Length: 302
Length: 335
Image 1: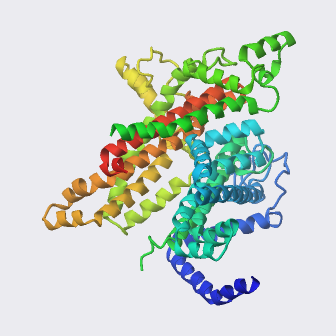
Image 2 (image 1 turned 60 degrees about the vertical axis):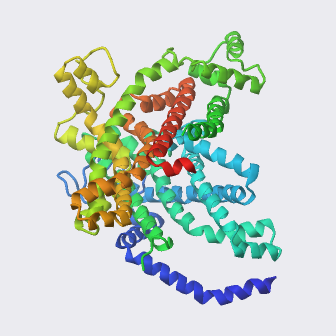
């Protein structure tokens, strides 16, 4: 058993390398995607090293500096580069710490949605029949509601908070994965290599997870990227409505919500958190576009 | 065609049942006792509690409760709002036109700009216009619209002082609603200044709500157009010596619009989700703000029925889109 597993891997490793190379070749043709990737790496670094980079702790209040404008504007100082919020916290520091929450939200939501979607999609596409009907009807049902509305209602049931918001968003995004996997499994299931594996005696679990699933990965990766940015947007929207992360968490949407009443007096408290959301989401969407170009052979032009 | 339609409707029945189950389950899934949850912060006396339990049927077995709920909903009884004491359906009817008006103008905004821009980008593929349009579309698609709304308020309402910050119309104007569309009603009453006020209130929310659909429509139009421009019949039309404008405007566009129509239809769910945020920012009195306010007021009767009504609307619109699609594209009907 172990031998049959080692053999194809050893033979496949140079193959995989050239695979990666062609992937990078097609990915790097898309200039936007490379920029997106670069920005995303910067964001990850900012999130990881927030305690080192941030000039202040995210929740420390300077009672002498409420609503201080950013450094380049009159009244601002280099002490607070991007200004301070209504209770005297440094906006730059809060934004840096906020990157942690946004990336965490994206990662957790995509992991949850991916796991759920792959499981349900595999079951539905592999077994068909009533399993398929039951699962896909539930997926249709979830998609019948506008996503944000359903997330709102779920958070109302679960109670406001960052973790519950992530759960709700994962549930709302999950049907897209289930549909994708199901369609891919149905397309792959009757291919020769699957039949061959079946004849060779592979069980259901092995057929589903080891034989079929790796061949459905490309669309899943693209969808995963898009869901990552969607999750960040929806979590920020929930935070903005007051049902996501709760203050004083430096989550970007929550920061926007507490800045709302000051919009006409202090543009910077509103502008920077939103800009952070936009840049993050845009970078991830750029990567997603590049991935689609690189992974989808139909769109690839030689 | 009739068979296609009936088939489509039959497929919706499980979803319909599912939606009612969701709405039914919502109140029962809330943490704590549903009657106490409905009563709000003040609570109820024990005698009144029993009375309410009887009245709402919480003492019945669960499937009987569900049957009862479906019976009520089917006869148009969506309960009475806890906070306003008005029937939910009545509130919905007064608020829905506001959302409809906002969505309608948002869609108009998205289509009027998105479709021509997409066509032009496809025709001039690879040009600076194409590249900058696609770049802008991606930014629009990535936009946190609640922030976008705030930015527009800062600039147009705060800095320039051109538009009001919130609401649907100036408070000094009052007239009987005819269509429920403020812009249309003010015209029907012949009040020009009221029309101007309604329009200035509408501009920013419509732009905010229309931004994501605009980006999606522009991208979709461009790619649909690109696909069609490579088809044989377009080449034939060119070879016949028809003018470029005619080939693009008639031969290509007609076929490219089919997927665009579907995209527009599919934006309805996005639009309603966006309306929740847009209406909250601009204090626009529609169903999105109504839902959010009700969640905060713990008015769960409204949340439950609002959820049901909104899902029904999305479902109905999707059905209409499917049918329209089949009307434009006979190939679908046969499948």
